[in-house]
Image (cartoon, rainbow, N blue to C red):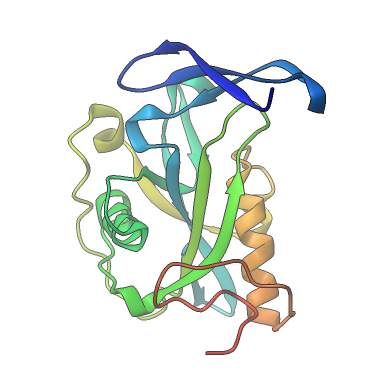
Length: 197
């Protein structure tokens, strides 16, 4: 019989799907798919070394599904077609005002956010030490325009509920400390963390 995926609901933003593969124990596994971005999102955890310690750039904005008060989270954005690296560069400018190039980005691998969604997060970091911050351009949405980007210490990161933040922090620390790991495939032109160029 194999694996069968049926779309239960679909709109321009999200789809609800059901996977059936009875011989493998999945007799009606329901999950979401982010239609708006083809199931791909970029997430960034920029850092800098300032005042003798590392600081991390975090987004502070209202995320309605988490509540109507500003919440701290990673800098994120949906895939818009083309190269995922270009999406990361654009999201950083839109949400923080920092302008970088492809060579500035460090690939931190990929992740999922939960077992109820097939969305794949492409994770990046960038060392913004010495970079000048410009004005965030935003994407035109009211919630993003009302938000901002803030610098926090690693102690502050432990309070953030966005699951991508601690994962990127851990992978970034492994990168900075030179801890080797099996590299994941990376976008063209970006060495995975732990790999030699």
